[in-house]
Amino acid sequence: MARLTVEDCLPQVENRFDLVLKAAKRARDLERGATAQVAWENDKPTVVALREIAAGLLNAKALDYTAQSEDTTAEAKAEDDVDAFIAEEMQSVSEVAEIAEPEIEVEV
Image (cartoon, rainbow, N blue to C red; front, side, top):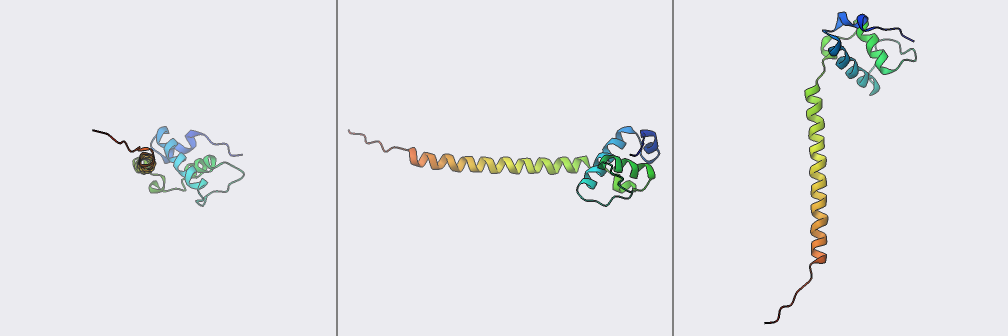
């Protein structure tokens, strides 16, 4: 098991908060199938990501955390899901309204 400290990684990043964001992004990339640049040694993706950062194996561009674009993508997907749900509900409501609408005869 790797023995890693925050101090091992800090020379490669600006601050601890940036380290967390970049390590999390890299760990997600590794989880999705990205090639690790260090040996896995039965470690979890988060540990591998931190070991890569500490070793200086990732360039700054690879470590850039694009929270805005990820949030925008998630937001757009959520809006699409809501739009689809509303359209589906409106369709079923209109079908029910057509079936349930009784004909009323009025005598004068």
